[in-house]
Image 1 (cartoon, rainbow, N blue to C red):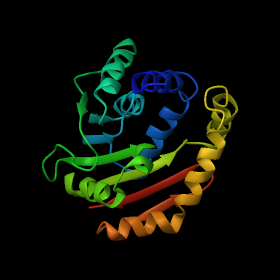
Image 2 (cartoon, rainbow, N blue to C red):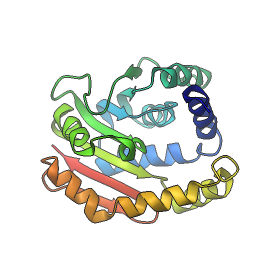
Image 3 (tube, rainbow, N blue to C red):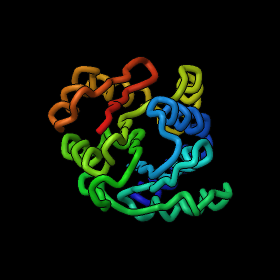
Length: 207
């Protein structure tokens, strides 16, 4: 399967099987960080559905970034169908390791899922910290919002990705609570909080 086919397959899974997770994760991010207005950045937006929910559930202006232009073209189609508010949702192409924004730009930065694929996670975290405004907050990692949602996805997703459970288990072995904490410290982040349970794997911090 070529890259474009993989992008389209993931977008379809996001619109269907993963659909219940995005509203719940957006709510979790907003409530955990306590930021509902200002400028936000989502790194690794894919089909843009988490960014869409962040806009719906807050007054934030959200920049949705992905390093694959084809993913952003597809995201624009999906979001247009959903009637997205493009006055507050901006799609942009860029790399997590070299974010195309000035220092101190965002009140909130989040990334769900893509962090585990960043080639240099420490550099990526440093970039997130760089673009945060003083007092800004970030939530980087992954999660499903609720245990019931994860279970619903687990049952359905095997029809598309038969090895999904093995992938999730491997990720949890590679990224323990302590490993996430140490990555944050190595990135120069002081007093990071790690949210880690059967549903969540998040690094949370304030600049």
